[in-house]
Amino acid sequence: MNKIKSKTVLFFLFLVLFSCDTGTNTTGNNLNPDSTDTDPTGPLPAILHISPNTGVLPNDQLTITGTDLDSVSYALFTGEADKIYPTSISYTELKLFMPEMAQSGPILLVTKGGRIATVDIVTQKPDVNNFNSGAAVSTGENVTIGGTFFNLLASVLFSGSSSPVSVTGPTDGQYNVIVPSDAGPGLIKLIMNNGEIVNTVVNVTFVE
Image (tube, rainbow, N blue to C red):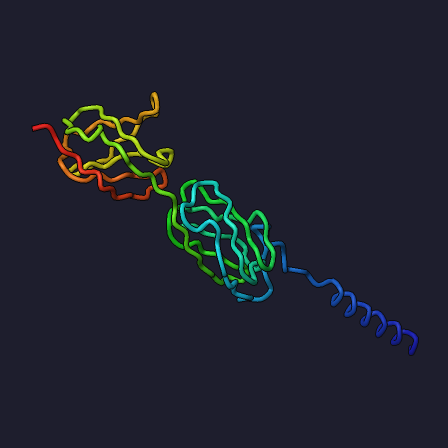
């Protein structure tokens, strides 16, 4: 009888030790979208710098430096619906790429514990330096427009017009836009591919 009791106790101890030794590790990998953390809050990253932070272009590599950056799971950009995951990550540095549709504003760095740190960026803007060579225009006219970073430009909104019109080109180095029928004199605005609106100092006049 004593031998049976001893064997029962030893078997019970073996089960206890085995269950303690096979716990699940839930720390995860920061580059894994499904990574989780056993800490419901965890550390909050302290951000020292992001480069570049102005004149940011689509597909630019952004480098964020600070501390506790290895707690970040993913980033959310202004204007971009998808989660963006780091391409490399460490305690002091995080790298990720600028999405095509991201806009100026805060980037939200979401940790595995659900905390959020923010850092701001400003996108590169297109700029107009020539509009119909300064001459007055007429509605329906196909006019030339020139400037810089026009690869970021989708359309132009004329003063008084209800809808922006697409920019075409370049053809022989020139971009073109058709003056809409409801356009009036005044400043034009540029509509970027990512939806941002850029005010200009280009004052369009019309043929009398």
